[in-house]
Length: 271
Length: 91
Image (cartoon, rainbow over all chains, first blue to last red; front, side):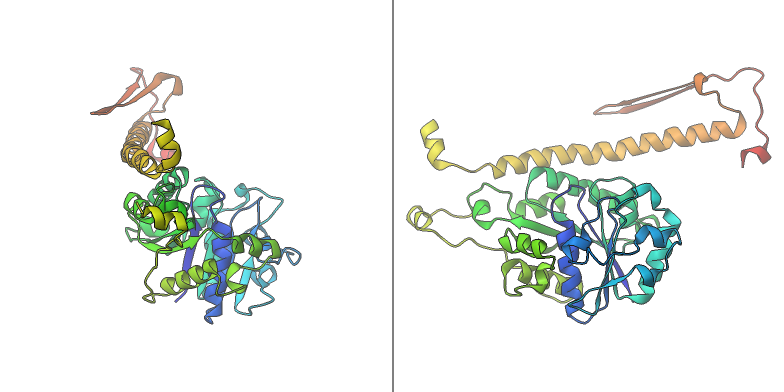
């Protein structure tokens, strides 16, 4: 049975689009048919991050409004034949999305794919609510930083009240993905630790994506980070997170900093 | 003291954690409360509107969200010869 996932955060710039592309590609590599849907109408970027920006003809709005059929708007990834993209419109705004239209498109995607990943826009308005509306599960992307954690708390509250599942009295599965984690800074007590974030948000951990130059390099070249060097730290972390999403029991290892000379001398330890 | 701090560096994470815990404890409470107040306000007005046509100028609503209690004041002026809304028209 198809699973609809929303990748959301409240705050902008924490890595929703990077995560949507990376998890989508990682799931597709396991043989699942996956579509990633860009809900950021007016500010689409998933096409760029996935390297498909020159292949967009029709978009989500066209399909929602019935101007184009779904197969006309779907773009197949050039590297992975099980990975597809449904881009957002760049010229319209979020009001062009209708509740019924989105419901119909999601239902159609459920029939064609085993995973539908909805890349939410930032904010808590219409676009973000429509992106989460039909989700079975949510990936809440959080940076270990006060404003991001606060906004994630807000989004978690909305997942529990504004989704179809929540309205039916069912529980939506929520997973926390901590991105841009700097183990050295956390060890020095300069950054919220994983335990801090988990304690505050009280949401199960899906994975920890370490701060890494691989992520920027991947978006520079338009290739999801999981399709590049699969041994790189962020790629490995995303691949493991994808396995957990599929229900596999893979334990999360909290990145530890390599000890420098000073640390050894003064015996600094994680706070 | 300052020199000591300079070399010690860092350690702002506990401050972040404490600030967040206090803020979110408050926000989680007020978000729930404001919703209840807003729901009550809308439902009360809807019930009244089923029976009489409401003049927006004759309706005063005050909300006071406080720490121990919140107050929702709905003040509706109903003229003695009010215009009845027929059930058919209210659907």
